[in-house]
Image (cartoon, rainbow, N blue to C red; front, side, top):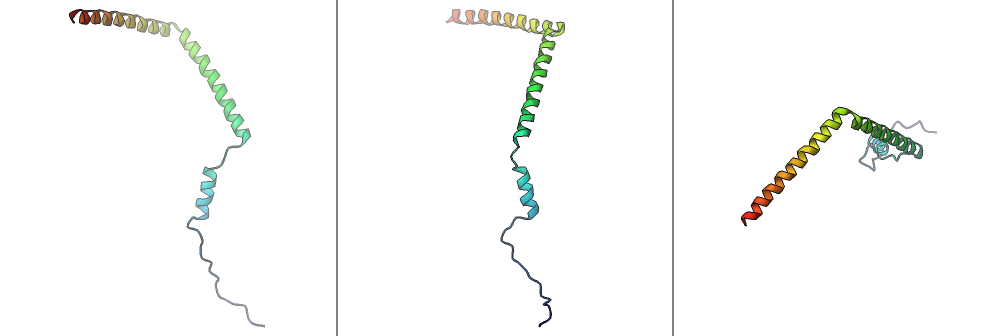
Length: 93
């Protein structure tokens, strides 16, 4: 028989994307599993409950209530000033 051949076999690439790029794209486009979706939703629900509780606590603080009341008083004053201004403007025409 003949001696083993020492020629290299070269296969031409049929794609321009490397394996690394393919696997990177697969990982980026990977769909989350049902278990991880459920866990994420539970975490969001828990965070929402905590945020609502914190907002309620903040609303009950005297300093926050004073600031909110101050804004309401300022808004009422501005609204009255605007009404007076509009009355003056329309009385001219």
